[in-house]
Image 1 (cartoon, one colour):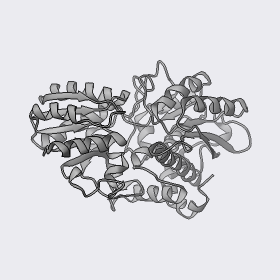
Image 2 (spheres, one colour; image 1 turned 180 degrees about the vertical axis):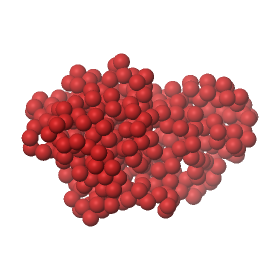
Image 3 (tube, one colour; image 1 turned 30 degrees about the vertical axis):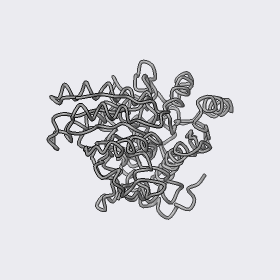
Image 4 (tube, helix red, strand yellow; image 1 turned 90 degrees about the horizontal axis):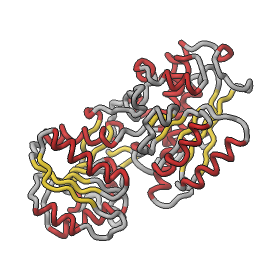
Amino acid sequence: MRFGKAKSLVASMAVLGLALTGCANSASSAEGAGDGDGTLKVLVLGGLGAEGILANNAATSVTAAEASVAAVNEAGGILGKKLEIEVIDDRADPTVAVTKLREKLAEGEKPVAVMNSGPSTVAEAILPVLTQKQILSFNIGPTETSTDPSVNPLNFDLSPSVQDYIDGFVPEIQRKKYEKVAVLHGSSATGELFGKLTEQTFTSSGLKVTGNEGYDNAALDMTPQLEKLKSSNPDALVLDSYGAPLAYVLQGIEKLGWDIPVIGNNSVSATSLVATDPPAGVLGTSQVKNLTMQVFESTKFDPKNEKLNAAVKLMAETGTIGSSLILAYNYDAMWLLKSAAESSNSLEAKNIAEALLDSKVQEAAQTQILPKYAFTSESHAPHMEPEHLIFISPSKMVNGQFQ
């Protein structure tokens, strides 16, 4: 484990769990309390051996999981038992993830929970295995069925849905008094869904969508799509783009001399390009002068948010924060687990899953990356409210937060 050097900071997080610990019954009376060695095994999968952005994202996700375990242990553990975390490097490859997960489960000790680090292709591959084995899971790579309790009754998505993010755009567009918007999106499953849902949501909100264009994520030039959108004369361009394609989109806008407000989604803000100085990035250049981006409140540094700042400091001491805190959902996972297990006085997956649907349990978890995970019996998605999504200009990033 990598969190030994963070020990001096963990104590500052313990206060978050005192109320939970104080109301818990003894571990000996808890259902499914496990073996008598006083520890509970949790797993986190992450593509630490992948390349580029995927590796950075995995590092942030795994670090968040390790810090979460350290903080919860300092707060008394769960039902009197300490958590022990094991990292599985899945190289962001679905086949590798399934193989390594099956090998680990075959060793005999059933984990109380499994976290992943995305992408959604990995989640799609491992969730059937976890459902079959009746293991609780926390997922940051949403799939078409990951929030559907009829398919994955023991899985809870920590990442908001595409619809949640899009709902956050509407008040921002209205605040800026834009009446006509164009949409440009990538060809990933998320990008295609973004394109579809933005048009539906914006139109139903009284906004005019002047154009909606998709581009191939493997393309090196998005000028044709941008030219079409420019000719539709929108007030603003709503953009979905992640990684290398974002550079080509920004270059295309500059090439066309298009002076248009660009409102990027969370994929844009999660791309390090916009927070990095030239030559590796575009921060401070004309390419981002008109760009604002959607982020969580927690992804923007606030000196007054002491609990979040303590969590970020702990994560930084624990390991590597290689991307924005939008990939740090796993910090909230063990606090959700603790709250649900101690509310139900059980370590059985089905009992914890049922407890996670209780709004009081959700609030008691005192999560930091998202303020609340509003899981329901109909949908195991966090249902993030628009007011917790903000729009900012690109800036330097320190420990996963824009400054």
